[in-house]
Length: 116
Image 1 (tube, rainbow, N blue to C red):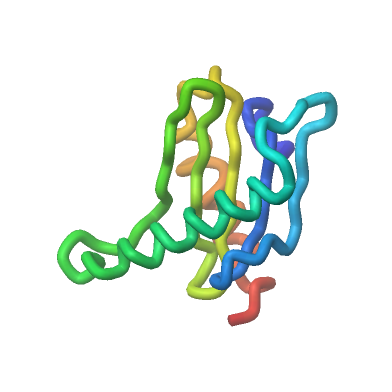
Image 2: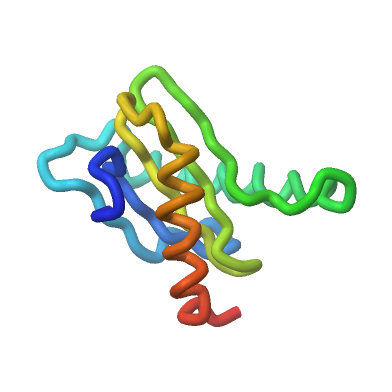
């Protein structure tokens, strides 16, 4: 959460789409309920797994990103077992840069802590 002020929600999920940990920026009202976040997580992981079908042709997914009217969301694989989910505020115009220059290097640094 402290990597960038535009990050307003962080979740870690396993490959079964079970949210293991969630953090939300203080003072921010969530758009989704806890149950809706769990459902969104399930859909995100399902979509990620379906992309694996094309991996041999287009390469591994680095991250998936969705831009909505109110928020921006990213799904980032940590390894085969765990995923990082991020929600950015709607003003996050450089989310790609935040993900590639701040988030992914942090994941790489701590990836060994996520046992497969």
